[in-house]
Length: 634
Image (cartoon, rainbow, N blue to C red):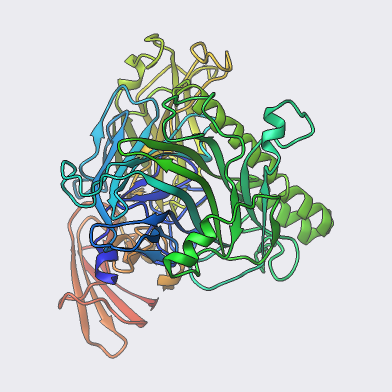
């Protein structure tokens, strides 16, 4: 099974604040580190497994039918196919297709560090569809031994106000097909008493691994049908919410040093549409069944047999479930009778929303200083619940508009970062300036913004430049950042924003493209002018500690950027010989780039990484010779 799991095909959504994977069989299995679980806030495509904020640990659907007769069956019995959470029935699930579509192509991003430009690589096989109603869409289709084929389309947006959710549009079709040949209909009967369950597991915590069952959960929406019928005091949403509660050991997981709540977001699964019956072909509005989901329960994933799984699916209880400490949940819709070639459509939304990173840090400072009480601290974090409902309303709006909402301009489709002496230069394309609004075909481009983060791409990004709009700076495609320090990595992103005139939902509100479409995969480094002597010779950083680094791919300890140290204060040309404290030669570097710095990836002459210890560098040049010591901790 593990080999099957490792070969699971999947695509990732990484266009907005919520990042997650969609697999070829609809399953994200429990505690599997190779899958990108739901992560928020998603600051960069180059996130750290250790530093990311965890919310969801698994996702999938269970498909159950009563009195089912398969190809080899002689006695009808309950049958459940599990796609996700603890279980994935590999023998019962057959992937058919997996595609990712984007409205705009990935940009061409290059970083020139003085040794020639290096391009960034993106996901392969992505289709560009200019008419796409959203910014990213992943479509996964798989069939099952029930003869039930599942088509899933997900919708993700870069648009302001729509960055905290992803919509999942499911169609469960009785095709009768149980193998990779969709034209071969092995089963021809109506499926009876079908239950369609959405199973997921959460463990809200700031780091990967371990268990911390202090999370609160609540189903909000048991009397949603009363609200539909005009009762203003009833629920206006069908959403299951999980958050890190203020009691027990959690306390919103405060950082032990800063008191910052490390996972301040609220996780939610909401229902936007559930078909009343399989023969109802209406797609929007009138065919929605306000009594669904009919079953909302906890501890679903521990069931292994089809009979017990079917029982969990069909409990038919959806009162306002709430509590603390549960691990897994199931929300199921049914029962349906699905004739051959008919289908059931269910549209749900996954949301993570909460207070901003800046507000979380400020809360920690205030609690440490005693300017606010613990109660004030927790009440402020609890406003994330309001943010979740705001995101749910935005998702409802997008669904009501058939997924087509006002759009920002595209990000620049090419970006070049060049390291210079005492500065880093950015150059980007002008494609956004000529782009028309996808809906109105009117050019509403207003300007561009440049964002930067130092050393770690998952840290806080800050806006450092804006042109056009209200900035009083003419529109340009070049920016020189001279507020840099030699030896540090600087990551950049360039976005485009409009004037708000084509925003028919909120006239005048400017929309900005996603920073995630153009942030740079490798930090630009400011170079130094060559020194006339060796008085300023030093090693950066010193000491070097691999655990304190996060400058390249944080998931890969052998990433060159994570292992780079820099010799600075060098003349134009010199030879650097690096020795152990015992006098063994480790590496010889020929410095010939004419600048005042030289990087080293800590790889020896024998193509091995050096070990922890004290090292001595001898620099030999026409300007003189010098020795410097540095420490490495790996």
